[in-house]
Amino acid sequence: MDILKGALENSDILDGGFSVVAMASAGNEVVKDAFMDLKVDELILEVMRNKSNSKVQSVYDAIRVLLTPDDNRVVASQVYGYSRKFAEIGVAEVLVVALREQVAPSSLPSACAALKAIAVNEEICRSISENGGIDVLLKCIDEAGVQKNKVIAKSCCSLLSKLAGSDANKANIIQQDGFDKFLKLASRFSEDPSVIQEVMSIVQVLTLRSPEHAARAVALGYGNLAIQTMQKFPSSALTQKQACLMIRNLVVRNPENRTILLNEGVEKLIRKAKAIHGSCKAAATDALRDLGLDNYNA
Image 1 (cartoon, rainbow, N blue to C red):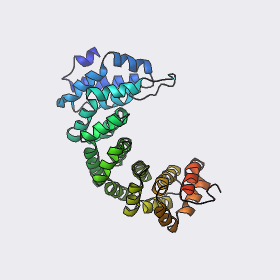
Image 2 (spheres, one colour):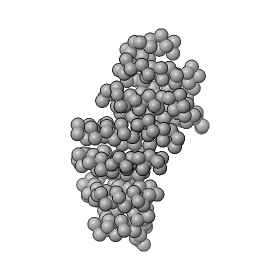
Image 3 (cartoon, one colour):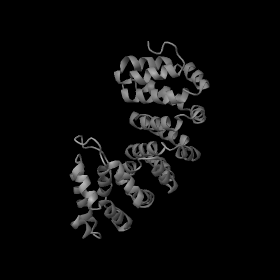
Image 4 (cartoon, rainbow, N blue to C red):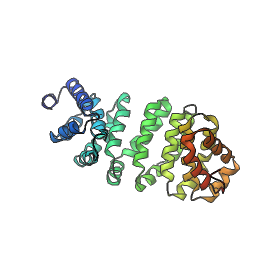
């Protein structure tokens, strides 16, 4: 910490120093606590507010690791409180500014992971949106699709899934044509199930307990996306499971959507996934039940 405090204008030393913070804190609650006692959060904020330090990529990794409860020896981790403290002093706000103005493409996934680690409750998720976080991420998703950068696309979708846990943010994402942007992204990465999984994951969050959003999603083509994806990647257990989870939210409160998907042959695909993939069994059974099928356990 003394070295870092004495090198606030030296991006090379800062980059090396925060790499040490990240490595030392990984899997060790005691070290995380020690750094927080030494006010590493305030130092991180000071470093990030200096735009000449935009090349200090390791600061994002340090944030993520400090705020990850990854020490299995600890019953009750303190990192949830640390995440709130990072948000309270303004680190989330500065991260949004960095995403908008100064993060190099190579650092963008790390910056997204850092912001995701801070976004631990409704209030923080809303504040990130109010500071322009959703606007920035949707723009990054568009650019990642054009540039075929799947790492950035997946990182941005993953962060948006976390932010969409807030109902206010759900509405914000949809008002900004989020559904259209995610569908376009899935189309651009139609041969990459890992990106399509992230798209289905965020749609699953956006349609949770929202029949209005579910109706809109199916009207735009997300039912077809689920069916085409299940047909195209039958051997990918995670893809099949994610499709089943999305289908559940599309149909559970929307009887009209059940009819549409059943007429497209979704039942056969779900039963096939259930039979082939053990990890998919529960999600497939729930999807069959929510589609209104009596023999969903068969």
